[in-house]
Length: 387
Image (cartoon, rainbow, N blue to C red; front, top):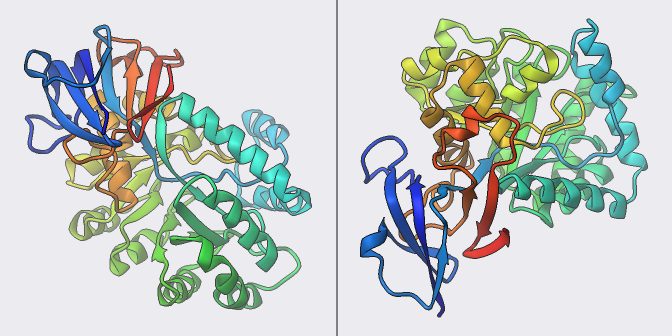
């Protein structure tokens, strides 16, 4: 089996808890890749011999970003809605139905091509692991085919039939559909089940019912919660011991305590607040309270059409008072934890060789130079896919 040593790394972020500091930094470093995995990490002066040598030229190397929340299977454009928000119209969940109509009208080939373009866009910006949700089909056929499309690109697929209630049915009838025929059609293509537990979408009792049905079908639970207002979604996630609950913009002191005590990860999505002009989540307060935080893009056509995890890091540092180290850790190791993964988001022996070379001397440049394309190379499963 061929071995490759990447040497000349000015600063290596490992996220290895066995090393010092949050990021487990190694300076003047090298790492060895074998069979798609990391075989060795340490000072360049101590690097073992390998079949192939690659010189990083003093660049910083970080784990590939782990984007644990995205909605890539859709058709159509909602730039007019964005423009309206920027001139004073508030964001509501109702715009989802606009995308539903266009997604239903698109062919499988059109949806697949669109997802492929967005995934390539993410890869070029350093995302090596991503989750993709359904949720713009809202019929048995269209939810199942959306997940089948998503499964071509990732194993981290999420059934979000409970995104909103379609206009042509009642909430009660739709919950029955989601927990019955739609779930049966979607489950073979999904690992997770999600509910938009929010005003204008699904209440706590409906979310509990949907998550219970998903669990009975072998799907792990996730939640969108507390994005638009205070509500019971975060409490439900903590009560059920979900691995993660996403958005967490409006939190009560009890919500914060419950997140801390349950160890449920709060996945924050600062691109949404940037794109909707809502208040940003209080990441600093959550971290200081002992809550675990992940960052993700929430790439979607309505409330946040960005695929850039680097932008999310810059926003988290500038607007949510996270340190650059905390933000990078949240976008890599904690994103992996939010997907209940321990094989990605960390550069240590035995872990996946998913890594990013930055055209910068330090990871701090991700926040220090926002908007600048710093990704000089991407490796996935031990193979260069960019650079």
